[in-house]
Image (cartoon, rainbow, N blue to C red; front, top):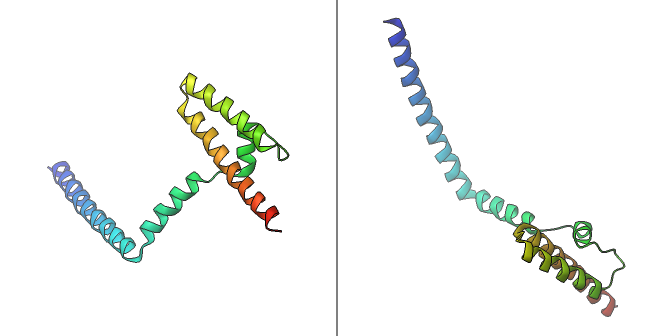
Length: 116
């Protein structure tokens, strides 16, 4: 008899606790959406996942800081084609992101030298 009462108390208590946690979670979401924190956090996560550091990009493509743009394109095309044939979409996308990163860097550098 005591075990049955104890089991009922545990079940009822966990139900009450579950409802309270759900209500607190909903309130937290409502507060976050009012202040714009949720959208800002999602945007920061998306932006951070797309950014690649220049040293990482150079390492992926196997080029140095003194490599010409033509050499970078040759390495990019070679690695991109190899990964498209073997079916590694992840590596193919990393190679593409590396080229994008270095391309942006080279564009910044060329604008800086022509503007001086």
